Image (cartoon, rainbow, N blue to C red; front, side):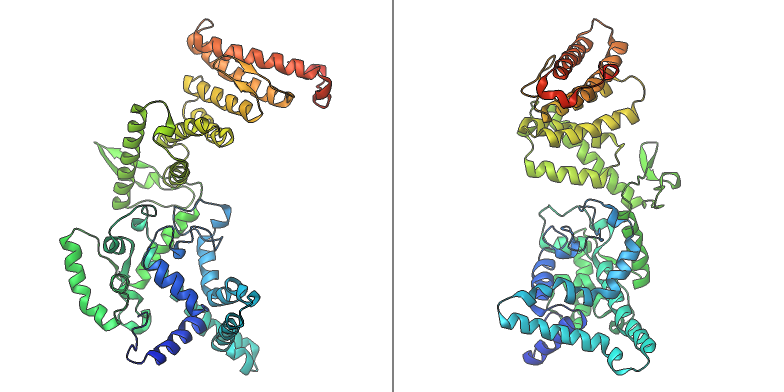
Length: 473
């Protein structure tokens, strides 16, 4: 493993590594050492780990909920199969092709050797077999299927729900390996290539497979002593079933699951399964979700007790990561996501970043409209915040009960925000009455904006925005 197959013969070992890594996997050996040995092994399942694909080197893969969902992630099984079948060729001819443009002739020569190795080891039947259909079938069975199964085995070892949540957290290195890695039972090494003892391999990367087998019992005992997980699937097949179920879950961008509360206990139920992909959490996953929910709620309660200045407890980096984490953890209709969004609105407003605040404020409006139908004070205030931010983005000055224009007036913005203020005013008047300060403040802003819009219609410099008489308000 990693230089320990035949360590007593270093030159033979180097040749063997180049043959396997460059010929079979399509990786230049130095790239393999950098990405796999230095980054993946030392920083397993962190933002540094290239195997997590957080920075979307493979744009059709979403391998962790730390990556924001996009429509390209909607076909996880198909994308995994295609990339698996073609992985050595994609790696060699797409990812590493930049080496041809290097001025260093040794880099170009090294890449040329990788290309030759890939062609000989993967495509040789096409050159020697007269029947091209049989040649392609040979390539599919001997090369592409083997490539796909190798990639699947790698993914089974690290891509499972219990390994999520630690991308930006510091922890003991050995503990992280146990939490983020799992084994599977293969029967014998020839089938798995040594990937079945991945926990032992990650803890002791230079141990040969025989020695990994020898220390397995000791590692299990130590994990049990320190109350750490030691996970192992009963077979590669069972691991693949769970892995693909998790990939389907990650590929579902708009689904939501619901948990059932019975006598103070929260548990999964068939009725709460995702309606899009059918995912239903296990008892352990449901417990983890409720623990994460409770932790987020504690943080929000702590923020609520602090001074009304989000910059006192948030930084730009924290706010950015918080948005992504909330998106991956909670559905749009979850109340905690709305609460976090309101804190982030205050934070971005304090920074003067009105556009970032507006996107979150719009989400708050959608949330209150869905969760509190009819007249709601929270919905009205959400509308007011949205209107204020739209005006600030357009260059207006906005106060608690007034609006000021500076420079040219965009009549379309005046009309749009006027309607938003009008909806908020209607709700507050119905709830509190026409004399209440809540209604009076939003009414005054609405009326001031209408006056600004009307004056803008008569301004020569805004003649392009002139509306027909029946369109004015």
